[in-house]
Length: 204
Image (cartoon, rainbow, N blue to C red):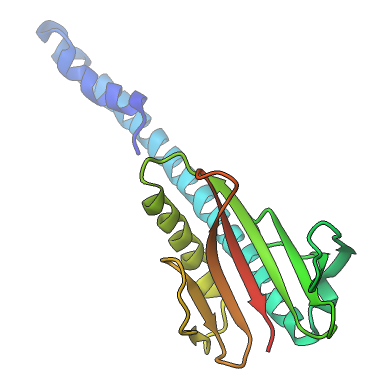
């Protein structure tokens, strides 16, 4: 996008008095071209910086997704960190995950207290949505996350219909049933404005 300086430079010759336009038009035109060239280079550099940042972010996300999918083959033992007593309950023992999805508030490994075998990883993201049309804003957020994560998933994974009722925008993809899966779901927070997104990884 051209800066305001470039717009001013391009428009200024037309505002010069008629007596000075012919004499100064050549110099003014060259100055405008130099300003335009500088701004074009600046814009190109900024665009390149943004694109490189997007590529780095996508690689970081896919690396975390790959790690969590692979960790499921061993019950997430490799990503289990410290015990999280606040999130533990009657059925599940919780551990802070050592790998966290970029942009998530946290990721937690849950292990079945009774069997010691059943386990999954839950990553959560929280957003406060002030928009008057919250449903549209929530759906847009969810679609952004799905669009970012889906290219990271194995090529042979397909969308799964678990034949249950879910909120609009629910996403479930995996190897099949049974098989490794990734689930994206939305939950309301403590207030109407707070929305929590959960991204769950399930092993085979």
